[in-house]
Every structure is written in structure tokens, then in C-alpha cells.
Amino acid sequence: MGKEPELMALVLGLFTYPLGFSRKIRQDPQHLKMWAGDLSDYNACDYFNGRIPPDFRKMNK
Image (cartoon, helix red, strand yellow):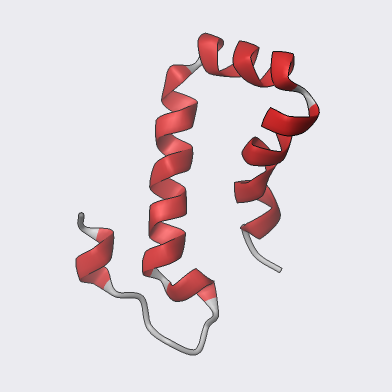
């Protein structure tokens, strides 16, 4: 297991602790942008399966 739980923690927090989620985003709006970038890289790397090299063209977008 890699970053999957870490990447999904923000989404789970939205549903489990909506007030805590909104507080976290208000305190650090950059956190949401960084999370979206990490999710994009995760997708570009074919979900880090380790068998296929990442598509660096997708990562540069």
C-alpha cells in the first residue's frame, strides 16, 4: 500500500468531519491545491502500480 490512504484521507474527512475539513481548508487553502496535484501525479503514474513507468508528459501538465 502506498499513498492511497493518504490521498483519500481528505475525501474521507469531508464526509466524516465536515467542519474539521472546512476549517483545515480555510486555515491552509494551499493544502487543497497540493492534494489535487498529488492526485494528478498518482493518476499519471498509473496509480503507482510499479509495473509500468510513469507517463512524464501527464505529470508535466
